[in-house]
Image 1 (cartoon, rainbow, N blue to C red):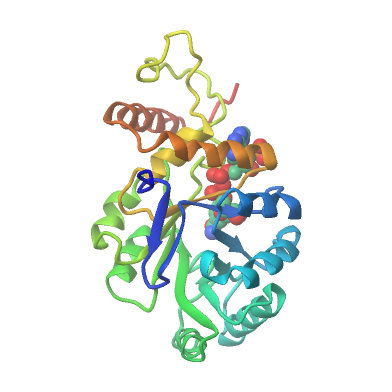
Image 2: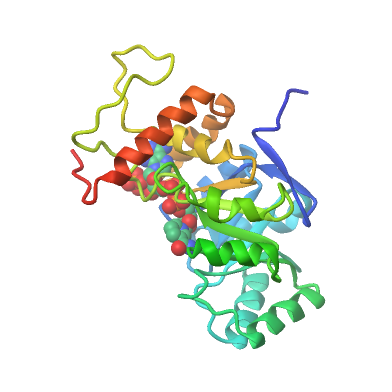
Length: 281
Ligand SMILES: NC(=O)c1ccc[n+]([C@@H]2O[C@H](COP(=O)([O-])OP(=O)(O)OC[C@H]3O[C@@H](n4cnc5c(N)ncnc54)[C@H](OP(=O)(O)O)[C@@H]3O)[C@@H](O)[C@H]2O)c1
């Protein structure tokens, strides 16, 4: 068997091994694309009640091969304990499973609150066996760092990409490698890294023919950047269609970035960030 340390990961607490690209279906994937993704080895799915096109497909895949698939359910909003419980119970029923792998509070501090009552509700769901682990999506990185050190959360969903690598200082330093689950999203930084930006001059991509037109970054570079961090268990991809899905999954085969590639990507990310208003060409 080949070395699959870059392409697959054992998720702590869940004891499931999955491909390191998790799929979010809300940017255009249809039910048959979700089934195709599962055939191609995808085992991590972000789901919210709003991801309607994926629901029937996941309700087929998840009960059948429960040990191979992880579903992370992101509540749409969570301001009360009742909202949290209703999200979990609705997800169990819609996905036709007995236990959610991860129940996540959305955008902590904005779309959800961590009150005592909500924490109690989350822990009760865990005690009842309806939820295996708890997580949150969070933009406030300093708070994420504190929560990583001491909180009920087993999983963190964080913005992390070449333009916004700040989680390295603010959060990753608070994590013992692999002790929590860390999922990154916005690999393409809302597409800013993969759309041409006027006025940025870069040396050729390491090892590439000077005639090859980079920048911008390719989606493959974006996902490989995130996955090259030893603190990131997996990164989410939100493909617009099946062709993008297959292209992004194929990116894993290129393996981790070399030091030169990493340096190039960080420089490009800084260049993009330095432009306050992005002059896309
Ligand atoms: N919690 C939060 O605050 C928050 C914030 C952001 C995102 N999210 C969620 O996180 C999940 C992942 O989102 P993301 O922003 O991380 O997704 P992403 O993978 O960084 O970006 C997805 C977009 O990138 C483009 N793209 C992807 N692959 C491509 C390819 N091979 N070729 C060309 N273009 C490609 C597509 O844009 P086009 O459609 O233009 O082709 C696609 O819609 C989603 O469910 C999203 O809703 C959550």
